[in-house]
Image (cartoon, rainbow, N blue to C red; front, side, top):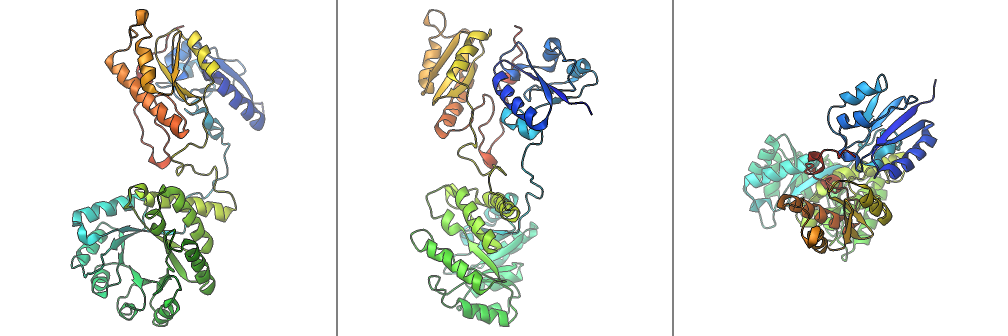
Length: 469
């Protein structure tokens, strides 16, 4: 079989980064290559029609790789290539190894065995419409059961209606109450799990016909837990055990030890952990906390967690738990680190950031012939580059002020109208955010917020045509 020869097409700005990536890949995958640098600075400005006019196909090439940003009908290049396959590479050069299959074996990734109970807090204070809206959001985020949370001092007379309405959505339901006057109608309406049972209500549990969560009368000593478990088990009531996770400052580490003690005492029992006691009660973004607690649950065989989304910094906890349970399941069952597997929970900072050097940007300003503005980040500053222009500042306002004086006789540039100025301001705001949080900035692309990323339309580069140089 003949050795494969790949022809990569790019613009001047991406040449060095592409070359570095291709050299490494060619060594690993044993192929030859040609890198064709076309007479344009930014590869995203290319169109297939323009490439077809500029590209000289290498006779040795067996495949042609186009820039991922290249948009439009590839027919002109396909015609030029003849029988050689033509394909688009990734938009982000950092993903070129993935494009060629260079990633960890993720066979089975996404499997999990931890169940998520998502609590709707203070349901008696909400309208039925509000309860259903939250239930649908939780389910879309990955919740397995919708937990109807009641308030102390009940009973809540509307509990059966709420359970029935959520069940009518096709969702599974649990009821969070110690009051048998609320639990009985909830179970009759379709709640399949009761949170929680201790010595105060365990006698009533015999008649509910539902699975229950057994909790201690005193979490700090586990007092009453063994007795409640024994009472329920001997009467055939299915149960899960929750020793109760305490918040930081109120015995958090000791409560973790109680989970371990309980697991040793009941090695085959189903267990649950209420992880909202940490995410809701700690001044920290919830994703990392959720993953750590899910890892503890995975290692201890705790197969259900209770979470909620009340405090604003935990407003994506259900989705985080869904992604986190997949991550820890794969890591623990395959004996690998939970790293470079799934970056959707890396939201604040990016896994890796690459930036052009100041010298690269100076060279770009000297080489380009058009007056379009390119925005970059480097060394804690926002950079604005155009023909014979390279401005940089940590303050986008100062940068814009300098741009407004960069035209002839200190006037604004001729091509800087109100719409363009608005676009530049928006992009520089994104660039500054990337600088502050050490994120990757790519002009006209959304910042990567992991699973929270929102797609953006390409408002600038898409509308421009390549400059004929």
